[in-house]
Length: 230
Image 1 (spheres, rainbow, N blue to C red):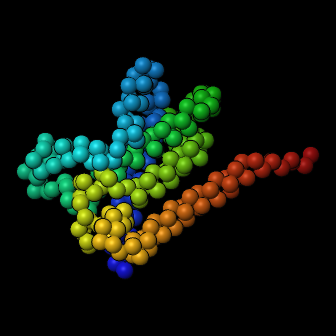
Image 2 (image 1 turned 30 degrees about the vertical axis):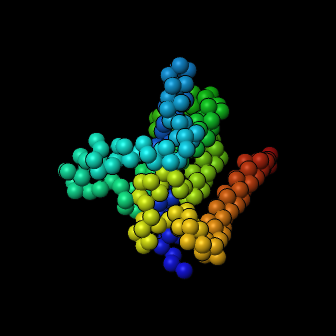
Image 3 (image 1 turned 90 degrees about the vertical axis):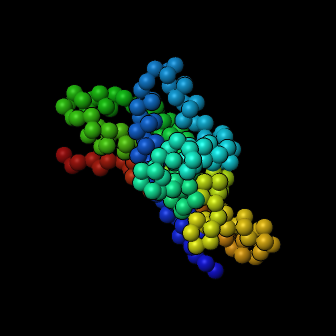
């Protein structure tokens, strides 16, 4: 059993999740503060990949990153690098597909944040950077963590956009999802089922670990403070 699809899927999902972790948090933070009219338009644009079929997302990316398209042709001409049909091409696809998951959950967490905490910190002379990382993020951590885990799980199982942007080449661009499809096409149900089990096991382990972390965090927050002896 060739383990390349597993390694490739994990690195693609991991890199994509790291990218959207920071991009999604900052997009959610700043968009949550803009006027409602502008927020509504930006919301539609940034959430659109969530409702579009993955194959449509992959097609649109090909229209931009293909070797004969605007960005793809420029990068190929200047740097000699193709933005499609390589293993890291899937990072573009998964990043676009999973971004709305991180953005929506992080924005919901930021909108539920009690702003009086930030105002109180400002009166103490704390910088906005300190307030963001040491006060706002810890208070919104559960929502951010949920978005991160959902994004990773979605990236691990992404097929439509990934297959259109990087195709399927054993040992080069194959992922778990594309491998399952190719094995199914060749009637190798036994090996396809093994890969399905592997994918499900990883997703189950990640979700279980996060649930345990959330429970532990909740218990720490609810623990009553000790009364000092008089």
